[in-house]
Length: 505
Image (cartoon, rainbow, N blue to C red; front, side):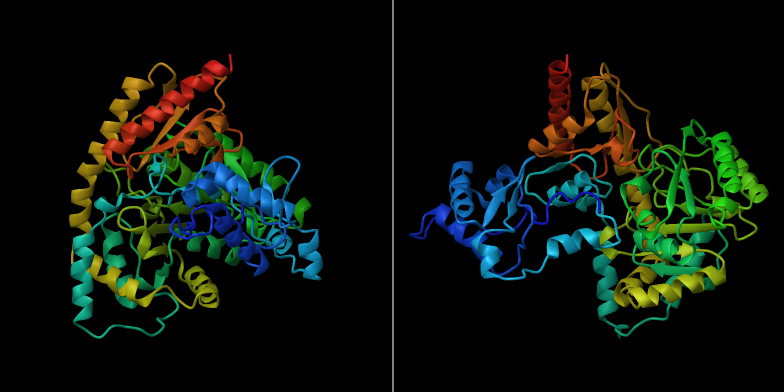
C-alpha cells in the first residue's frame, strides 16, 4: 500500500572498531549477518544507500562494498532491478528458515498509509550529525523556554505529583488555565468544551475516526500541510483541495466544490456534508494570513451551507509584525467551528500537548475514543503545562520569542534577496515559520533539487509534499537553523539550483 523508502534507518549508532584484529569489512559483514539471522532485518527489507550506510558507519565506501559483496555471494542480500539492496527472500537463508515470517509484506498491508518517501527521508535525516535543517517546522533548541520549564519542574518536584491516570478530557487544572488563555484571543470556552490531546496530530486522528464516516469529503486549502500526512486518507476520507488567493481561501471555488459534493450526496450512499480544514493564520506552508473580511465571509458561507470548520491555530500567536485577525472560533455563535491549538510550535514539540475546543457532545465523543487509544496524555506534562499558563510563563515567552523569530526571518530574507532574486520569488511572511519560495525557471526539477541538497547535508521541503501537482515551490523555515547554518545551507541550495538549471538546458 503506497511507497516505502527503507525499513532500516541509516542513523543507527553502530560502527566497526578499528582497534580489533578483525578487518573493518569483516566486522560490517558480521553485524549485518547478525541483524538478518536474528530476524531484525526481515526478508524483503531494503537497506539504506551505500553512501548513507558508509557515512553512518564511518568507513570508506569501498570497505562497505566489500562487505556487501560477500553478503550477496552468501545469499544474504540481493540487488534488485530498478535499484536498491534488499535482504534476500530466497537462497540458502530462506531454506534454512522454513516459512520465514513475511513481516515486510505485513508492513505494507496495514490500513494506515506510509509517509511519502521524501517525508521518511526527512524524518531520518533530521537527526543526522551535521545536517542543516532549512525546512524544519520547529523552534531551535535555543529558542525554547528551558529556564522557565526548569523552574516549573522544580515547583512540581516540591509537591505531590499526579502519577495516576487523568479524567478522559484531561487535567481540569490545565483546561481551566486554557479557558482563561483562550479568552485573550476572543474565544469563550468552558473547561467542559476542551479536550487535551497529545499534539495536533492526535486531534486530527481522533476527528478522522470519530466524527466522519468513511467516504466523507474534507475540504482544505491547496497547498496544505494536511497533504503531507495521512491521518484523513488512512481513515478512508477524501481530500478536496481549494485554491487560495491573496485574502485566503477562494470562496467561489469553495462554493463550487460544496455544490458538487452536495449534488453527489445521494449517489454516494448518503455521504455526509463535508468538513473544511483551514489554517487561517500563518498558513503552513505558504505563510499567508486570511483577512478579517474573508474570515467573516467564510463563516457566513458555512452558516448558509451547513458545513463545519476545523480551525488549526498552531501558528496563531507567532505573529511578527502585527497580530492576525481573531480566530474563526472567536466569531462562532453556533458551535460550528472546532478549534485546534498546540504548544508544539510556540513552546516545545517535546511536551506532545495540544487541545481541541468544540461542542461538549463532540468533545466527549472524542475523549472516549482517546481513552481507547492511549488512556490519556501524560499527566506530568499536563501538570507542567497548567503551571506554564497559570503562572504567566506563556505571555513572557512570547514577548521574548517574537523579536528573535523576526530577526531570523529578516536575515533569511536578506540572504534570499542577495542570492536568489533573479531565479526565485517569495512574499514576506508576517508570522509563523515559513517562506514559500517559488523558482521561476520551469526547467528546474524540485525533486532533483531536494536530493542534491540532501546529498550535501541540507534539508529543504519540496512543495509537492503539500500539493502533489506543485513543481516550482520549496518551503523554507527560519525557525530552526542558526544564522551560520542558514547562510551555509542557502549557499548549497543556490549552487545546486543553478547547476541543475544549467544541466537541464
